[in-house]
Image (cartoon, rainbow, N blue to C red):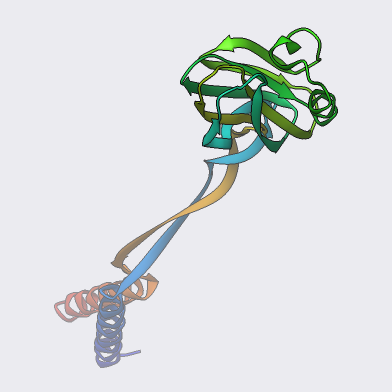
Length: 240
């Protein structure tokens, strides 16, 4: 190979090397994305709710039910006899309240069942009936009364007033019943519980960066270096 051929080879290597280096350098400046995935676990806490029943509680509600309200009864004066009047009403078994006021004098009062009233209506003992008749409630020589009485059974009851005075009397009567209602309440109690769940998780870091120089760039530099060596050798040879 003569000297001109060496120069041509050197020039060709230099051109090719510069081309390789330029192409690789251009590609190295392009931005690409690098991902870095890391796996780990996290815990998730949540709350659950359930319900439980407590022992039932029992309450009683009492209501007052009117039977007779301000019932007016007038009885004429006694003339060698005695006069009586009454009112009646159906009642339930249980506690009841009786209240009456008398204007004009003292009276006898009875609260009868149906059978007791039938016995009373057949007698003629008048004011001396006290102690001879059975009754739910008996008051002798009364000018008024407010109190409670226990009604034994469900049925019709008579409220009887007897006037043995020589002058008329008037009575105002009020009767009420107590009604009791039983209510059973079962409380519901919420129960709260917490639980922890392990959840696998992956963290990915994304980083943009240039591609960087590749082997083509360094191959180009090597070609240029070889071309320089050839040129130097050629120059040295010529000066001999």
